[in-house]
Image (tube, rainbow, N blue to C red; front, top):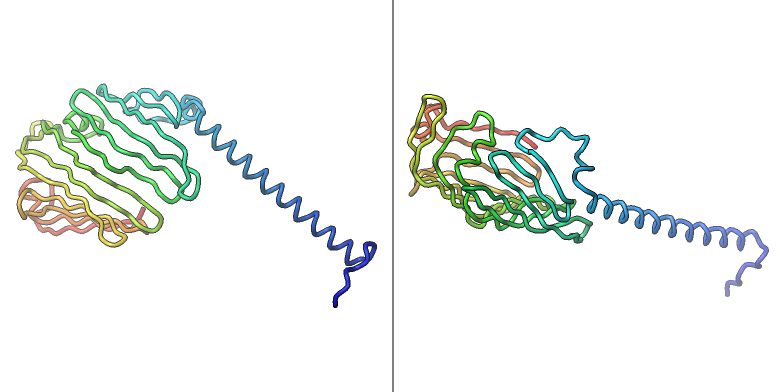
Length: 246
């Protein structure tokens, strides 16, 4: 039978020292967690004007206001982007909530997720008007309002997810003196294993392009030769495939 070491023996002193070290390590760890939580809370509730005052915001963003919990941004062309979020664990701290983009010809609403291992938008629906194109320098001007149905674009751990559909009715687009007539088109999102995919077609079974991105951030864009029949600027000797990594 093993006898406990005498209280004054070297073994007992080492044991007591190890016990104190473990307690100190525990309280230091607890303090770090507490400070991290406090820092995250301060960042989450801090006014965006303070968080962004040293940043060069793009010219399309006229002003930001509120906090990461409840705030928004005034954009060019009279659009506004607003959000309302709440903190959560998945399993690490982050936040999720609702996101809304509105303007004279646009109303989109969906859910936002911003966690260390899950980031993106889900269940976005509404209409996207032609004025949104004016936010992109050099973009064509189109008289088309797109319908957005339950679109999800999400990076979760080692997987990418996509779902939903964007429907663009037939219409015209112009740039300078050039004008082109576009047929009805559909942008269809889907998920295959751990890969998010998007297919652009011109109605029926007439694919124009497809895009894929996997959980590792490898992306592939394939533009089919049929796309050149609608978009004259595209090469007519397709398919053209581009691969890159995020």
